[in-house]
Image: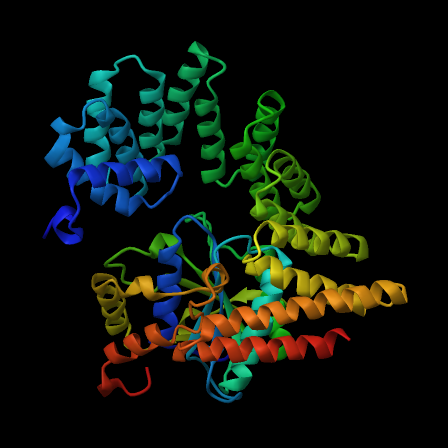
Length: 205
Length: 297
């Protein structure tokens, strides 16, 4: 099916989110700031939860809040990501499928992204992600060749830099925001740091 | 690289006290424990007296959490030397095997502890943790239920079981576990709030009303619990919007929802004061509350 492009910003924050809570399942939403039609460009993500992913109230709350924020910032929710607590199991859970389904209702080329914990180690040559798309009324594995991560090496190096500078601790997910509402789940500060590291020569990464 | 004591300008006594605090309050900040504990052990072992043994145990477990097998191994050796026949140390050896994913060997170790002492709860719980790590949820649930028949007062076990049930989407059984926890810990706002979330997830008018009541109870116990505040707003709004309720119930719930809204707005306004980056969240919440009101009414 269609091509999907994953930006450095979105990838970095997803990776940081999974790393921040290594013993928990984590999830979040994938956003796009480009208009519908053509290739799907995932330009950002919002980390949501690290506990009780399958309970309804906070998930509903988070989805509504992100929806509103997207409308304010001209972005769309185009996908969902999840990293399972059990590293060896990267298959989508019923909860993941449910939320992805909801997103698909509003976005017909939505993707479901599972983070493969087993590939999250320094020096791994392949992106630790498995992507699914909607095909014939079910979620099917997406052809790896239709998934683009521009400047993969640079992205990896940026993630490493965030860890060595300690900036990875800046990441706030929606759960953490509810624990302390002065924390910003839109991660403006971290976004700025990441964009600083993205070399200008690469244009819109 | 400078030491912890240099970086944070703390004395070894303060480091030791910090470790005790983390131990007593059961924090799992393993990287910090490893940093502080390793330095304490390497530089100040002689001053720690008998405290050193419990520190070795604490640091060992934290080291396993951080994949520091070198540190875990050396702590284990010290403990083995001092307490050669101890079941408690044997359990730590088992945990190290678990960290290395040598589950069969770990189980053998725990089984040998249980042969010697069938009432050893620590070994039993480790066996259940192994099932969980292997993704064998139904077996873990079964074993945990059996365990709880014998050890009815084990709070940690009840909470673990509630988590397992939530993951399996068995909300009724999760609710039962949380009810046990609420009974024995009536002042714990987190249990009330979790129970309310489970009820909300189960859905249906009765469950929503229960959810609302328990969100309210959580707020009574801790009026800063934002999840409970939002939960109260959402459950009251859903009830008010239901065609099955009487006019009085609708009116009451509209009032509860309105109260929750004002509390939420107030909380966000206080939080957003003077912080430019929070304006995004504050605005999003305001609009969200507005948009939810339109869909609920």
